[in-house]
Image (cartoon, rainbow, N blue to C red; front, side, top):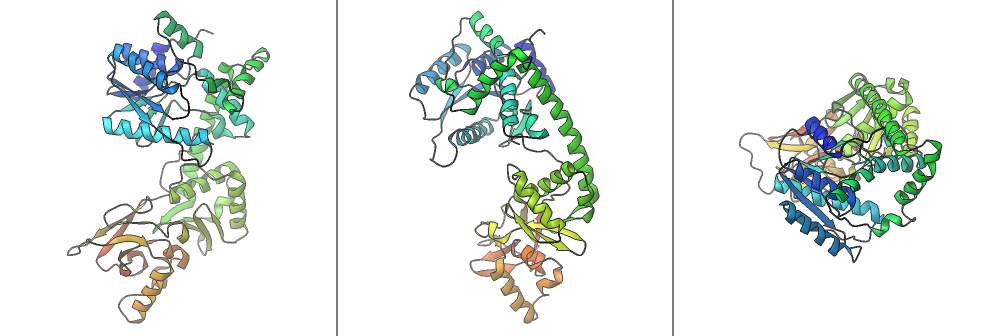
Length: 422
C-alpha cells in the first residue's frame, strides 16, 4: 500500500480541524518534528515553533540551537522553554506532563489556534503494543487521537498515517539534517522495547499499518460505547445540588457501560485528568451494589432512599480556599445578591466546623437547620461556604444563603470523553 503524502496528510488534517489561524509546531530536533516544521512552513501557514529543553542531556543545547538555525532559515519564530524535573514520580511521565504544560502556556500566550505534534504511524503502532502489554481495553488500544484538547489548547497530530521513513526522505531531499536522541536506543524505555518488538513482528504480518488500523477500529468501538454511556447517564444519573444521584438500574447496565458511567461521574466531581485504576473502581462498584458506603479518589458514595449518591469527600477539599469571585474545586462559583460585598470573603469547605456553626445558628433561630437540606452530612461538609477568616458568612446549600447563591457545574449532563491515557 502506498504511503500517504506527508504534505497532503497535513492539509487534510487542518481542513478537518482547523481551516485557518496561526499554529505552533513542537520541534525537538528529531526527524519527525523537523519534517513537520518544514511542511508547515512550506504550506504557507502562520507558524511558530517551540522546543523544550528538559535539562537531561548535555547535547540538547546544540540540538535546539540547530532547530533555531533552521527556523531562522525558514522565517519561523522559535522559542525555547526550559523544564526541570523535581525528582518526584516517573521521569518520562513527568517530562511529558511538564512539556505539555509549558507548550500549552506558550500557545495560549501567543494566541495560537493549535499546536502540531510530529507523531507518526510507527509511534501509533508502538503505543498499541505498549498498551497491549499493560492489558489495556478498548480505550487504551485506541492509542493516539488525531485531535486532542488539553491545557486549554487544541493539539493536532497530522502525521499519524505517515511512516517515519517518508519524513526522513523528505528532509534528505531538501538537504536538511536532524538529530537522533540516544535515549531512543536505550532498552530500559518501554517505547524503545516496543520499537524493537514491532520490527521483530513484521515477518508475521503484524506491522505498523496493521496495528494503526486496529487502533482506528478501537476508536470506533469507543465512540459507540461513549454514546451508550451518554444515554445511560441521561436515564440513570442526575445532578442534585453538587452531588450526583444514580438510579439502582445502573447495575443492570452492561459492565463496560456501567464502569464508564461511574468513571465519568467520579472524574466530573473531582476534575481528575485520568480515570482511576480498574481494580479499585470495581471494588467501589461492588461496595455500592452491596448497599455499603465507599470512598474512591476523593469522592464518597452513600446509599440513599432514591438510589446512590456520589459526592466530594471533605478531606479532599479541606485545604482549598479561593477568593469569593473565583472558581472553587473546579466546579463552584459564588454570587453575591444585591447589597452584598465580597471583600475579604473566600470560599472554603464547610467541614465539620462549619456544620457546627450552622447548628448553633439554627438553634438560635437565625436560619433553618442544615439537615432540612436533605443532603447527607458528609456531602454538605465537602461543599463550599463563604468565610471571612474564621467567621462563616453564608452556606447557601445548607440552608443559610445570607445574601449569597452558589452555582455548580453539572456532572451527569457532561458529554463523555475518556482520556487517551487508558
